[in-house]
Image (cartoon, rainbow, N blue to C red):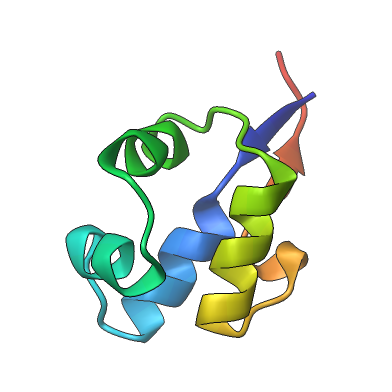
Length: 68
C-alpha cells in the first residue's frame, strides 16, 4: 500500500495556493515539498505541522492507495 497527497493538492487548489506559497506558509523545506510531490513517506511530525498550520485533518492531507 502506498500513500498519496492528492487530498492536499486538491485543498491547495481550493485555496488558490501554489506549492511554493504552501511551503513558505507552513515552514517546510524544499526537500519535504519534493517528497510530497513524489508521494514519498513523511514523518508524523511533518504531517502534524502541515495539519496544524493549514487547519486540516490527516484525512484531508493524505490517502492510502493500493499498489498494483
